[in-house]
Length: 135
Ligand SMILES: [Zn+2]
Image (cartoon, rainbow, N blue to C red; front, side, top):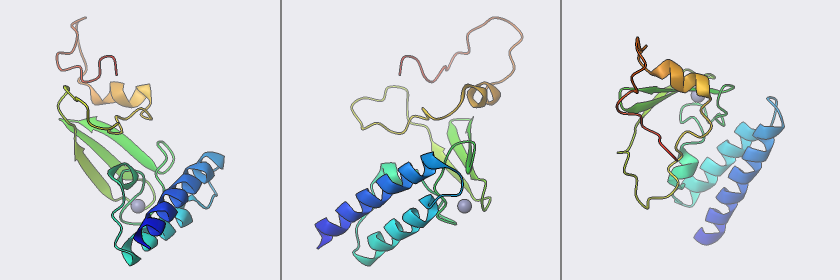
């Protein structure tokens, strides 16, 4: 039964992604809510990569620029839910990310966001802790 529940959760998150891609007024949030419900009901832990996809406050499916704002800030990824305003801070892992799974390195973060997060530079110096070299 638990396996089935886990599969169901996967499925729901897949649907949520599809819906979110389709447009703003989608069922994505509803799928997230359902997935969480299934998870709670059957005591299935949501995969870490799933837990980054939605707001824990309001279950909104997070789409960068639409329902969430992502900023990189002093070693943290700060995500602000644009639906309910809840803020989530995730420490960025060390640059030497070895074999760990795709840790959701913010591939969805737009260039602008990254630039904004950096200190304004006066010269041409490369910022020293450039976090993401060849990802
Ligand atoms: Zn929210």
